[in-house]
Image 1 (cartoon, rainbow, N blue to C red):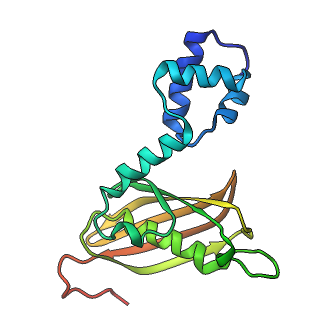
Image 2 (cartoon, rainbow, N blue to C red):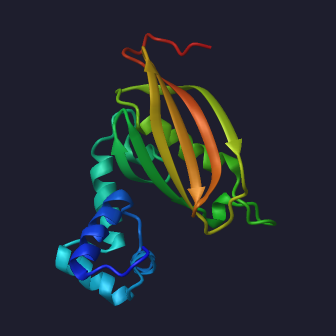
Length: 193
């Protein structure tokens, strides 16, 4: 923000920023508004906005209740937001069991699994399967990195749902994929090959 805002303006902008990106930390907000972290905490308290950990937990609890094609345990990573038929968001922290021991680089199948399960989660159908995937690993991901994946349904044609997933570590896009997910109305349908 260029100029200093008064308290009322700052709080109005704070609400907008957190609504647009609920994962902003108090530190991020303090830098953005050029104020102390304590000022941000006081603003949040006055506005009734919970701290980041509580906001994330609330989003996750709400998102899991909306799942249709998967159960909660089948989503790779922590589901943070879900708008069935539109978009979904998940967070996955790279742990020791996901990396190559020598390089501490995350094995690709973990990154793919997060994206694929998120693409399935966003489908507004009781049963859905992956029909086609086109993926690109752009940068290596390391032990301790937090992968934020966002899935967006960009087209629906019949029972085929076209879903784009972009995964970032910080501001860097590390992976992207396009999926054709097939919603099965009855188990008698087959995925087109």
